[in-house]
Length: 230
Image (cartoon, rainbow, N blue to C red):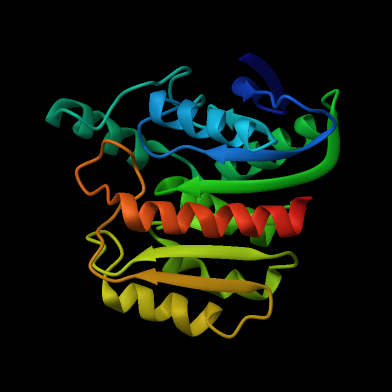
């Protein structure tokens, strides 16, 4: 594990970096949930490194408080997390992702290709990265609030895969219908729905974790990245 320092016009922040065994390699930028760059996110980055990618997880809450690292295990931490979420500036976050991608491409061993994957808040940011940045491939897991940004769907220029939980408490059926209407027939987008699953079904150790569907979603994402980043 190493760290990457990313510079922006507003200041700088750190990103967790996990390196693969073989270089050169494409980059996958892993976008956090509302709990910061915690053990769950670092483990996801480590898994992508094992798959052969340079995995980078930027501290997107640095403008609120650098180094946030909490869990989803206590009510107090959930309260903290929602406070961070409410304070977070989505537009600035996407700018920070673009800066991370630029820094990632300059890393020794990076081959120039950059993918983005995100969960929960990170899922929303992944969609917005697909509409606002120059990444090569994007994988969004249950992005809360995505339905509010479907007017940007025409800006998607590179492949996007989206995973949605059928019974998502934070993305109700009406919101999913809006997403399906905008992206269902989009040439560069593929949608996958997981009936009966709730939000964060792919978070290991989480209350709604479902190994079968998490494995299915992750396998689809792995195949998607292999096709678009190799």
